[in-house]
Image 1 (tube, protein in one colour):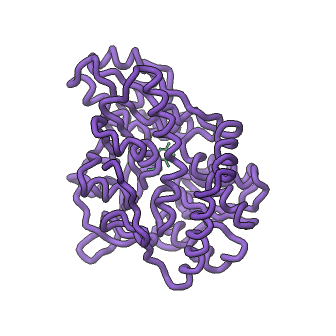
Image 2: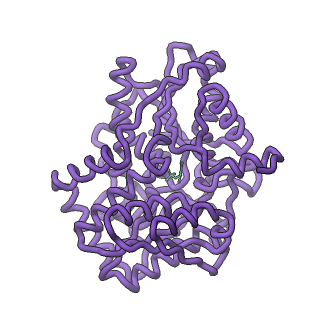
Image 3: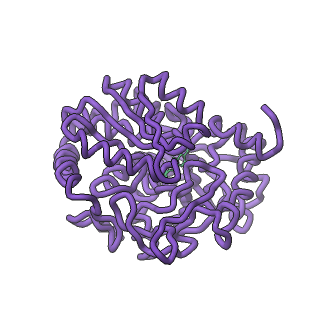
Length: 400
Ligand SMILES: *Cc1c(COP(=O)(O)O)cnc(C)c1O
């Protein structure tokens, strides 16, 4: 594991990943691959990245000992990596800053992005304003109706929100449309993908930008407790916050790594978003190969999760590989467990967490009591929950 260096030259993590796109997109992806390979070797690129993470996003985000929650649960000590404290309220900005800097380096004046719940759209619109680029965000027409506050945020930030009427009118269709638009205007356009998925080199690139989470955490935990946690846990949608925490820990064999998928109403029902836990077969979607929820005919299945950010039928290729080689354990938390964790963090720590992050927290809530008080669980608190209060109120039968 020390020399874990995936992906290979073709962008494969074991048998997952790669580049499954129409021929028209190959030149754009080649140009991107080349530009990123050069940027990756350039200390000035990383210096600009670190500058913005510090002065614009507010990093480093702290690690925080959730003492009252730990005491209440009566077992392992729970620590939180506070990605919720970043500008725009989640880890997504780490990635959009990195990709916007790359777009600037490539001389692109326009960025496009896809978004489901709108979080990645907002993070993209934010950096487009910061770097003086125009921004078009592709969003399913149904999602636009469901996520009005984020649509308005994007508009305030100067972005143009493009409604996508095809297919199920949600994230999956928005991503297809963004890819089509990229082909049409590859000369001046940079496509900012929001998670550690998509065709090569996106999964690797997004991972590299998000690794700031795990690199900081390693240093901070060493300073705080003189060692690394026994377990590091993160929720998995496409997998960017999780791979950002896990990747720097892959060689630390004493640190158990746990990825939590969205169990929805249960993996034994059709209403979940848990490709690995539900043992989905391998398939191709959005330009890469990985475990993918699909029926016998290869039609992509609908998904459900209480958290919009985890509502995706696939999973980033590096996670599928880490599952195959047994380095990361993948499991689920269902809607109910996530909502219970939401309430606990509000009441015991004064932190309103994103519903996505509550899936990782739910693992800690379930498992901390079975562990010793001297043991430590590090939970990636990927985002804050202000965006979710309407959803939570509705589920509690409260009118806002
Ligand atoms: C988008 C989002 C996620 C899921 O995306 P990943 O790429 O799996 O990290 C998780 N948490 C929050 C707060 C998000 O906004």
